[in-house]
Image (cartoon, rainbow, N blue to C red; front, side, top):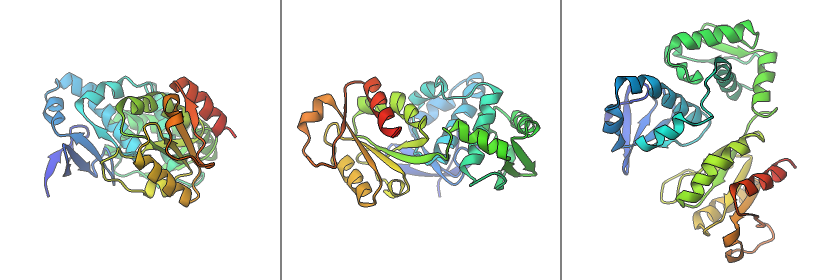
Length: 293
């Protein structure tokens, strides 16, 4: 099996070729999972200065780990790194970094006191977007002193207070899986990724955009979801198919469409009454009304 050095966590891991991308499997960036990196970006990232690498690579590793741990597929190129590093979602303060650890434990347990093993801890400082193990240990000790978690070696448990804190961070309830179905249209996908998905998270859903058309993907995330949002702008057959599959499983579907396409829909069913929007700001309001019901 072909192996390659992961640039972000410094491990040598198995890779698989997927078109122009290499899939890096089971490294510290994605334990038990994988991420894809554009093959042509490898040398470009490798050529960064040592200062650049110290400042950014651990943050990208943390981004990959958080996204893949939440069930999202991560596909990167060198051109994506700046937007990741400049994202307001990247935690900066120790408090925000500690919240990331609480959220990780929350995702992996069903209630206060349930044990979650983090092993090896030495390569898990990306759970808190920390640059090194020393900062992770400091954050753990801080959360212990605040009585938010209990540590027993490599085993961690949220206290009742920690569970409540983590629940409040994720909207007051156990976060629910949500799949967003979008056509393979770059500008539209950018609007959703930058402006709409963060808003969906505020209502207790963890949105995941299913793979673009032409890529192989599993329908399992749809079956595991509590909500599907399907944008039928552009009349994508793949979007209709996946949304229809969700309906067959009795998974609720919220349909959306840009106003210029609202009168061009091929399918006219009572079950398909999309939210019509002009701007991302318009759709935020409509989704807020829908998801608050």
